[in-house]
Length: 480
Ligand code: SAH
Ligand code: SF4
Ligand code: F3S
Image (cartoon, rainbow, N blue to C red; front, side):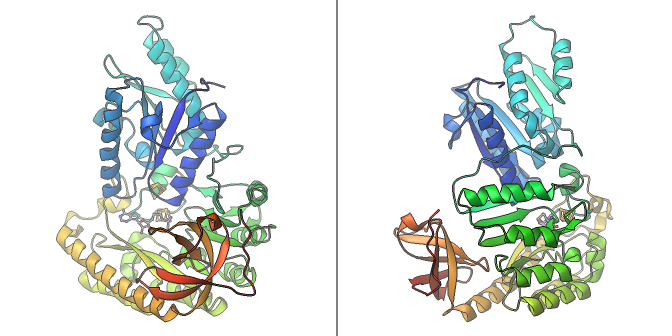
C-alpha cells in the first residue's frame, strides 16, 4: 500500500478500445492500492487523462481538455494531473513543457508503477525545502523508472515514466470493469508492423502476447461474474500466438467457455485472416457474424507505400473466403484518404473497392502526419492539399453511407437477437447490438439492460435500426 485510502482518482480515456481497456486497468491498479474511483474530475484528487496519438486532431482535442481540467487546480492546487497513454508516450517531456500544470506523463508500460509514481510525487511535494536534495530524490525515483523532468518553484516536481518495456507482461494486473454483460479482454499489446503512416508501434512498442491460460482464466472468471459477451483486443489481434497456440485456437477456446454467448475480436490484420480463423468463425456458435477488415486503401501502389503487406486482390480473396464460410457476415473497415502521393485515380480505386466489397460500416480518416513515422520522409510535394484531402474524405463518406443505407434497408424485417446494452436517447427506449454488431433501439424496461431480447427491425436511420421486441421460441432473458 503506497497511498492513503481516502484518495480519489478519476480516469478519462480517449482513443481505441485498447486504450479504454487500459483506462480500466489503471482504475483497477489505483483501486487496489487504496484509491476510490470517482466519475467526475471535480471530485478527484488525482485526474488522469489517458490519451491517443493516432491523429493530430485527437491530440489537439486532448490538449484542450487537459488545459480545461487545469482550471480545477485554481481552487485545489494540490490536485494531481497526469497524462497517460499514447500521446504521453509520444510527447514525453515536451508535453510537460507545453502544459506546465501537468504533474505526470506516463506511457503505456508504466501503469503498474502508477501508485508508486503518485506517492513519489506526493512525498516530493510535501518535503520541506532543503529536506532532501533534488539529486537524492532523483536517484530514488530513477530506480523506479521515474524521471524527474521539471522541478520549477511554482510548478513543483514533474515526473515522467516513459520506458517501453518488452518484459512488462501486465500479468497479475486486473481491470476495473463496470458491471455489465460485455467485457474487453486484451490478449496482445504493441505491434510488430510498421505501416508507414502509423504511430502505434512507436508509442506502444513491439507485439507482446499474453499467455493463453491467463486469457482463458480471465474469461472464465468474467463468465462467472455474469459477463456473456467478450471482445478480444490487440492491434493485430489475429497475429496472436502463444507458444504453439495460434489465434484461431484461442478464439475457439474462448468461445467454448461456459456462459459466453458472444465473442468478437478487434482489430484483425487482413494478412492474417486465414482458413483456420474462418473455420472457427463458421463453426463456433458464440463467435459473432462480424469482422473488421481494415483495408486502408483500394490501390496496390498505395497499399505498398503504406507497407500494408497485402494487395487489393488478396484482400478480395479474403473477403470471398470469409463470405463463403459465413454468408451473412457483416464487414467493417478503416480507410485513410490522401496518403502522401495518392493520386486522384488511386483514390478512385478505393471508392471502387468500397463498391465491390460493400462494407456494412466504414471508419474513414484523412491522412494525418505523425512525427517519427516513415511516411514523414516522403517527398514534400507528395503531401496532399488539405482541401483536396477533405474533398476525398467527403466523397468516401458519401459512398460508404450510401452503401450502408442500402444494406441496412435490405435488412429491415429481420428478427435479430439483441444484447441490451443501455437506455436509448428517448425515455423508455433501450439500445443494444445484434450479433452482426448493428445498433438497434426499441421500447422496453431499463431493468432488462444486460439481457438478451429479440427485435424485429422495423426501419433504419441509415446507420442504426429502430425495432420492436418480439417473442421467439429461442428467446432468452437471463439477467446479469
Ligand atoms: N491496428 C489497427 C489500427 C489501429 S489505428 C489495424 O492495423 O487495423 C486505427 C485506424 O486509424 C487505422 O486502421 C487507420 O485507418 C487509422 N490511422 C492510423 N494512423 C493514421 C494516420 N496517421 N492518419 C490517419 N489515419 C490513421
Ligand atoms: Fe498501426 Fe499497422 Fe500496426 Fe495497425 S498494423 S497498429 S495500422 S502499424
Ligand atoms: Fe490511439 Fe494509442 Fe489506440 S494511438 S488508437 S490510443 S493504440
